[in-house]
Image (cartoon, rainbow, N blue to C red):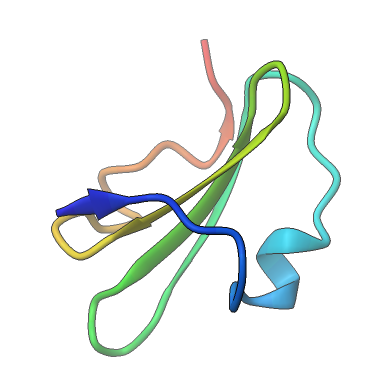
Length: 61
């Protein structure tokens, strides 16, 4: 399942300044991944079926 949300996200993800195409994420011990990427604006994602190994962290091409 993949969803988006705006409240209750880790500060280390939300406070990171990104340029267009960059991605940052964190995974908790239960396997819940929170990520943020920059397109026209910041987009936040929450996933229980992805891991950080499968999400490219850094500049998206």
